[in-house]
Amino acid sequence: MKIVPRQINTFLENPPDEIAAVLFHGNDLGLIGERAKLFANKFSCDLEDVFSVTRLNGEMLVRETGLISDSASAIPLTGTQRLVLVKGRGTELLSACKLALTNPISGAIIIVEATETTTKHAIVKLFETTKHAASIGCYADGIKDIYALAKKIFAIDNIKASTDALDIIALRLGSDHAISRREIEKLALMAGPSGTLDADSVHIALGDSANLAINDIAEALASGTVRRLQQSLQKAWYEDMNAVMIVRGCQSYFRQLGLAGYAMASGESAQNAIRCLKPPIHFKLQDRLQVHLQRWQPHLAMDVVNRLQDIEFQLKSNKIDDRVCTAQSLLGICLRSPY
Image (cartoon, rainbow, N blue to C red; front, side, top):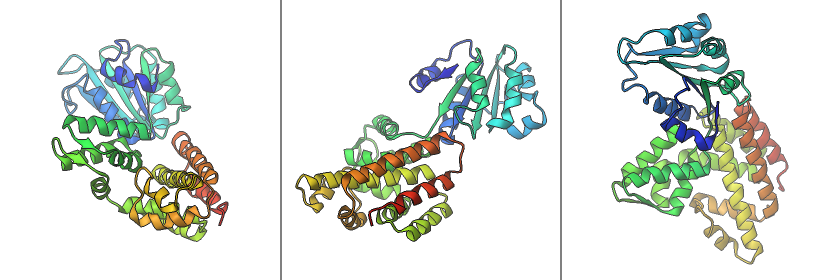
């Protein structure tokens, strides 16, 4: 059974009785872990109880493919149901999962966390096509998802966040659900019950170093400076920055460049066009953006946004080297800049 995104929350809260094995897969490791734990808690109040919970990993299953089946068949010493928790890369788990799903599962729940998979991976197809199993994709949050997560967390303590603050949160976060949740919870703790958050406080709290590193890449891209782009990317890789967040940050810069360009075409001055952008442009970027407005026609900037969205989709959906794909794609855009 394939669980589509709109059905995931309902499934996790009230799983069908016939489902005995669930695969959590995708490119967001934080979201995979969070959903797997949430689902596991439905069946055990203590996931560290070795008498009723068995933990397996890919390395163990490569050596002994029958471990999942054997663990699911074992009678729990406490409780009424055996919980089998499995983690690993998709390919190394495939044989063991095939064996475990061959026959109906009774008295056990199998929960598998698989990384390095796509929607076309054999292990995903196995869980989708098995009657007593289900597959749940866990992919990097989009802007709307981050908005919803922030509003949900802030609502708990009646925290009011400005629209600009929410815009900044949505654009800064999203590459890993668990990290996004932790950062938003820190903001909530900083604001306090019934507190408020504005754009400046969020800028400071989330830290400017990573954001400014992405801005360096976006500026080099818009300036058509290949050497500076390469240097900025090397720095980003050294700091272990996420490729999706780099591409998304470049999208934001070119989208604002396009919107400001259209505002100028309607008669606004460059300063007013930049001042009206949402979320507000960091003061360190305003002068550079004004220079780029003189070179980039708004329709060309929006073409780059579309291209960057395609790159983000590739990063999320294909089993490729994220850094190579990002570097090659950004280089192609840089070489075609109007400078």
